[in-house]
Length: 294
Image 1 (cartoon, rainbow, N blue to C red):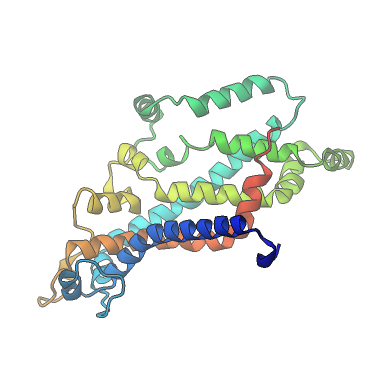
Image 2 (cartoon, rainbow, N blue to C red):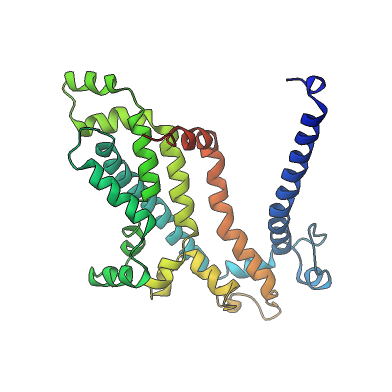
C-alpha cells in the first residue's frame, strides 16, 4: 500500500514503530561501538576522554599486547574446535532422533516425546550433571563440553515438525527404488531441510561460541580453556596475564586494563559475527517452517 493511501492513524503507528526500533537499535549498538572504538584508541586519548565513540588517535597497542603471547591464539583455536565439532555433533544427533520421531507409526513415539518435553521443562541440575560427567571420566576433556548438550529438546521438536511437513510421497518413491531409512535421511530429507539445518547450525554454533560455564565447571587445565573463559577471567575477575610484556622492549608501556578488556571482547566476538551473513538468508525461513505444531 502506498504511503498516500494509508490513514493518518496507520502512518502515526508506523512512524512510532520506526522511532522505537531506531531507539532500540541505537541502545544495543552504541555499547558495541564504544568497545570497538576504545580498543583502537591510544592510551593517552582513552584516559583523557571518559566516553569515546570516534577515536582521533588510532592505536593497536591493546591488540599487540593481547596477541603478544600464544594464549589468545590457543584459546581461539580451542573455541573454533569446540564450535565446529559441537555443532556437527548437535546436527547429527538431532537429525537422527528427529527423523524417526517424525514417523507417526513409530512405537512409543508419544512416550519419547513426553520424556523430551519433560527434559525441556525440568533439567537434572548442575550437581547431578557434574557427577555424571565425572563418573564417565570426561573431566578435563573436550568431550565434557560436547556430549552433555548433544541434543537441544526445543530444536529437536522444531526439526521433527519440519520433517513431518515433507511430502510422504518422496520417501515412498525412494523406498520403491530400494533406499533404506538412512539413505532417505541423508540423501532426501536433509537436502530438503537446508533452511532448517542452517538455522539450527547458527543456533548451536552461537551457543557453543558463547558458552563458558561448562568449561569453568569441567576444565581445570587452563591450556584447554576456550576464549570465553579467558574473557571472563579478564573482564569479570579482572585477572590479566593474557599478554606477555617480556615480548616487548624496555620502553614499552602496558596499555590500560580497560583497553585490554575491550580488545579481548572484540577478538572473541568478531569471528562469530562473520558467520551470521552466510546463514542469514536461511534464518527467518528455517525458523518459521518448523514452528507449526505437528
